[in-house]
Image 1: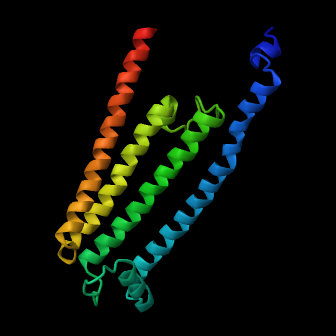
Image 2: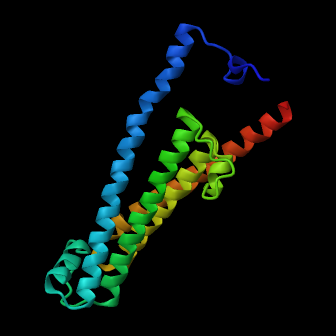
Image 3: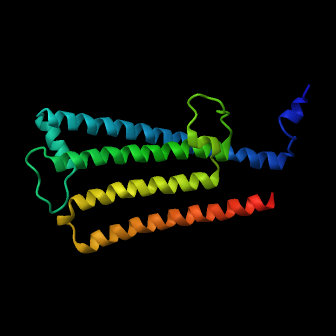
Length: 200
C-alpha cells in the first residue's frame, strides 16, 4: 500500500510551503476573468438581438446597429445593407475570439500556474489542454491575438475610404508586428524544446 505522505509528495518546510501556497493568490484573478467572460456573453447576445431586430424592421434595433458600426467622418447608412451586416457579424466574431482568449487564459493559466484540474480522460477535455504548458499557452495566446487583430484590420479595410493612409499603414504595421512576435515566440519555444530534448 502506498504511503499517503509519499503519494502526496514530500512535506515542505514552512517557508517553501508558504511561498508555494502564494500561487492561490491568482485564483481571484481567474474568477475576475470569468466575470469578464459573462460580460462578453451578455454583450454578444445584446448585439445579436439588435441585429435580428434590425433585420425584422425594428427601428430602435436599427439605430443601435448604426451607432455600433458608426465610423467617424463616414456617412450614416439609412437602411440595413450588406456592409453593415458584415461589420456587425465581424464584431460578433471579435467577441467570440476574445472569449476564446479568455478561456485559454483562465483554464490554461489555472492548470499551468495554480493547480492541476485532473481532466485526463474527461470526455469534454479540450484537445489543447492535454499538452498545455507555459510555452504552449504563450504561443496559443499570440495566435489568438493575431486573429483578433485580423478582425479589426478587416473592419478598417471595409471602411478604408474614410481613413487616411497613415492610419491604414499604422494598423497594418501593428498587425505585422503581432505576426512577427508570434513567429518569434514559436521559434524560441522550438529552440528551447529542442535543447531540452537533447539534455534528456
